[in-house]
Length: 267
Image (tube, rainbow, N blue to C red; front, side, top):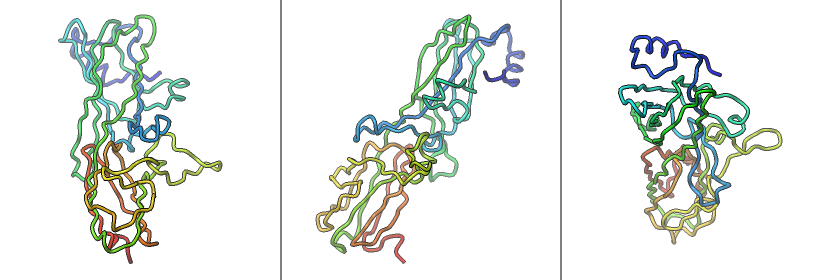
């Protein structure tokens, strides 16, 4: 069990009797969480667990209020990795995120905080859960969260579609080992480049899983819908020439332009 936070204890000493922390043997909530993909195009078995950086989550904020006395309220902040646990870790290990609380009912609000990619440190705060918790008097109350991150859209514009004969597009995780909590591995432990979804197509039906497309049939404006936020690589092959293009779908989505006549990694 995680040790009592000295900063929290000092805070409690300063604000008594309003403090919601217990004075004797510790009781309270042991908090754990994980981040779940929500795109179901390949079925539920393809929904993978995102890591904290893979889901653009830096911090979790818990707003805890005594359900019978709103003046007794405190805020607890944790780095995302402190309480992140896979299902196997949750069943075998104690979380390092522990809030000492007196036995009674509490209202709990949970926010996810993460830096928005491509900004100068701008943060996105996502309210992901509101619940009531009855803290037990004789044992630790385990509170486990599965957070499904809100899917986003990515607007993709293709230029130079008349300059080629055939093209393919394959959307992969930029770094599956960094993005996923439990990436699929080979027998030797290595992680292969991993396709995001086999059935993923744009709103115009363009395959994002490598199916060949005649360039003359390509439309220019596409939207990637229901995309889990994350960092991806779009591998484009045009008439035998392959090119990898970074595609960042942040918490607010994203957009990009690709000229098939002048691929960004030509030369």
